[in-house]
Length: 177
Image (cartoon, rainbow, N blue to C red):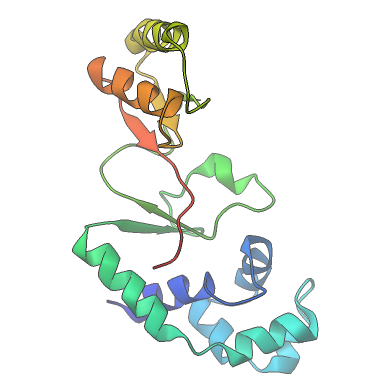
């Protein structure tokens, strides 16, 4: 475990600091510097102010970040930080793009052709047929199928991608360990 990843994970755990504030902080400091900066400096960063600056200064739950890192190591999960070169470029255009993503596998998150298939958890036979045909028709174009890993339509999309030899990416919000 490197100190850099420790501070990157810890940044996502600070109360009152979400992706928008993390982006603002990262424009001024490296992740480690954020935790060592003086409160007065942090308060002056646009969008931070005294309450969020105090949350940063009070943060001491590095053990939770270490636990999350051990989990990633155990299950061979790769963290992908906002400033990493492989971070999905399309997400960088979002106002509140995630500070840290987690992935496992080899899919190209910056592929030129990605389609996201999401839908109900209680799909019909008709939905299954449409998804299977859609994915089969997309297969010659080497499209990456992305979905939210939920039961129903999402799972059908992943299965159809695998059946047709297409890369598949499951995206889901994670609850910190």
